[in-house]
Image (cartoon, rainbow, N blue to C red; front, side, top):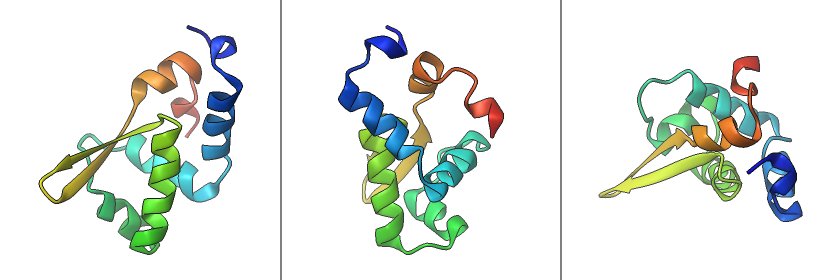
Length: 95
């Protein structure tokens, strides 16, 4: 599947998610991590509130750019590298 084959709604989600400086910074942080940080760690690094961090992570997750995995009461976040590889090749290297 190529970018052209995505639905317009998916295109809008991806580009809307990437159209915010905080979300770009989240992607940048995740691209530089070898381990999965907790969602709360991302918020602390960006110095944003928990609710604001959750909001931005939700948008990235809905665009299928990040994966959020829950283990007990802790949520971990990681890049969905397949989405970047398939639909935005080379993007992560520009960060």
